[in-house]
Image (cartoon, rainbow, N blue to C red; front, side, top):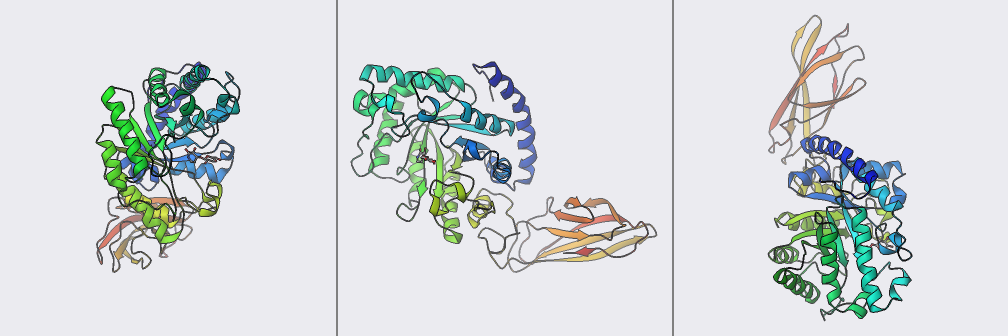
Length: 446
Ligand code: XIL
C-alpha cells in the first residue's frame, strides 16, 4: 500500500496498519479456511459491502474481520452522504469504515463518485457549466480525502439504460453534459488519485446483451483514445428473474481482452440451499477463469441487513451462520472447506460425510505414553477433517506431530497440517506424547 494522503491523521493511521495487514494476511494464508485467505491464494480479493452503523455489532464485525479482505462502503461514500450541500464534505461514516478496514488490513473499494441515484437535489438544479464544475469538485473532494487509500473507485455508476436500446440513462449529468460527462469524470479522477484503479460499474451487464455491448463499445473507445479507465465492475445482483447468465465468463473475458481489469462488485444471489450454492459456485468459477478478474465483493455480510431483504441472497444467515453458499464459495476458491456442516454442498461427502477416527497407544512408560489417532475417509474423498481428543484432567500433551492442535482446557481439537486431503478409504495419522501426571486412563477421541 502506498500512502500519500492529504490529511496527516489519515496518513499516519494508514502507515501503521500497513504492517499489521501483512501479518494478518500471512497468518490466514496458511489456513485458507476463510473467504479472504482462500481468495488470496488465487491472487484475488474477497470483499463485502459494509454499513458503518453495524460496526458496533460484535458478531457483524467478527464475521467481517475474519472472512473478508476488502470492503465497499454500502452507502457512506455516495454523494448524498459526502456532499449533502454544495462544498460541504462530510466524511464521518465513510472514515469509520476506512479506518476499520485499515485496522484489519483490508483494502477499500470506493463507491461511487458520479451516479444518478442518492444524489442530493441541489446537484439536479444546477445549470450545465455549474454542474460540470460541481462534478469535478466532488470527484476531487472525495478522491483527495482518500488519496492513496482506495484500491479501486467506481468513478461512474449505472450510466446506461436497461432494456434493449443500449442508450445512456437520463440523469442530470447525461441530460446537461451529454455523453462526454463519463470521460470527463475519468480524466478528473485520474489526476485526483493516480494510484487508484478507475472503474465503470453497472448492473444487468453481467452477460452479453445490448446494455453490456454498449458499455463494451464505450470502454473500447476509451482505450483507443487514451481516456483513463482501468476496470469494469459487474454488480451481479441475481435472482430468478435475473439469473447468473450462462455467458458470464465469456462476457468478463471479452472486457478483459480490451485491456481492463474486471471485478464482481455487488454480488448477491437470492435463494437458499444447494441451488443458491451452485449459482455462487458459477460466479466464483467464472471470475477465477479470467486472469484479469481481480476480485469479488458480495453486497453485505449477513442476510439480515441485505438491501434485498426478503431474498436471503448472502453467504451468512441472519445469525451469522455459514450457509451452503458460503461453503460452496470457499470450496470454489480452493479453501479447506468445513466438514462441520454436513449436508452443505462443497463439504466432503455432500451430506454423507464420513470419516472415522481410531485411537491406539503406541508407546508407554511410567510417566507418559504416546497416542496415535488414525483418520480414515469413508466412501468419498475428503479435503479436511477435525478430531477432538479429550484427556483425563491430570494429563497434558507435551508434543504433537502430523496435525494442528488447538487446546481448550483438557480438550484438544486437531486439524490437518499437510494431511487434510484423503482419497476415499485412505488413512492418515497424527501422534502425540502425553505426561500422565498420575493418571493412566485413555483419552476419549471423537
Ligand atoms: C443500495 C444499498 O445497498 C441500499 O442500502 C441503498 O438504500 C440503495 O443502494 N447498485 C449500486 C448500489 O450501485 O450502490 C446499490 O446499493 C445497489 C444497486
